[in-house]
Image 1 (cartoon, helix red, strand yellow):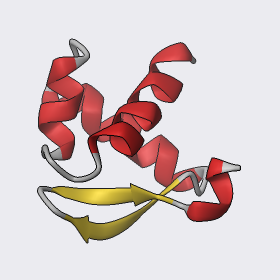
Image 2 (image 1 turned 60 degrees about the horizontal axis):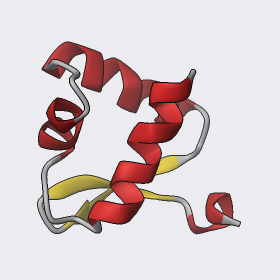
Image 3 (image 1 turned 90 degrees about the horizontal axis):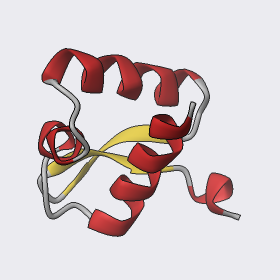
Length: 65
């Protein structure tokens, strides 16, 4: 799913400046779609819950390689 990778890259590039919902909206996703996408990324261990500025998620360091 291309939007999943795009959203993950947005989290990485944003570096906590915007909330996870705002990032989704910037990609054309509504809140429900963003929440489902976050859930999938959490299940795949690509992101973790951690306060990172305005965003409550950050990528796992080992997944960035």
